[in-house]
Length: 228
Image 1 (tube, rainbow, N blue to C red):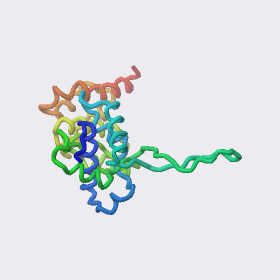
Image 2: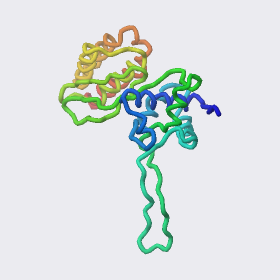
Image 3: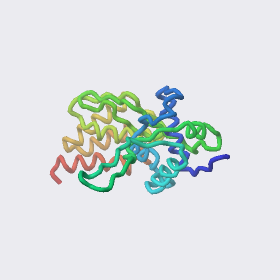
Image 4: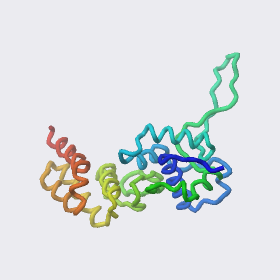
């Protein structure tokens, strides 16, 4: 019997399938619970527009688990109070990560269940100068798998800017990454005009659409540097 999925469920399954295929996992891991993408990262990459919000995502995740198309984890056993006459056997999922089941894999591969826009999450992004190993980075349809930032830079800010640019369909080059780093440095020095000019240059044609969400990030850094 065909499984009916809404768009949020398709998005989640699509992202999990992309993760599974990208990591070249085999069928054996589908028989048990494996550690897939972080639920928080799935939510971040899927809830990027007006179509799917966090409530839609949480309901879809619960429905997929109920349909046995995904598993979440890690599993935590119930803690029974010492001396209590009531003993509860079993446990529950902390819902920190999610992975496909065999049925979920088969369902995700079927054409009617493919999402309108697929999302992807890639593991193991390394940033030199900070302890970011094994971090999961969600960045819309295009993911930068290798990112190098100089020690002392604000890596979180850099990742946010790259995520926003890639979310608008741009593949961020090494030259653009350098430009973003320079813009961040200028913002930290309180040079708002120069930081904005550099940011506009990096964004190019996408500037008009990304300015309302990207510039406030650096603008806040400028304010902090000026003590405002």
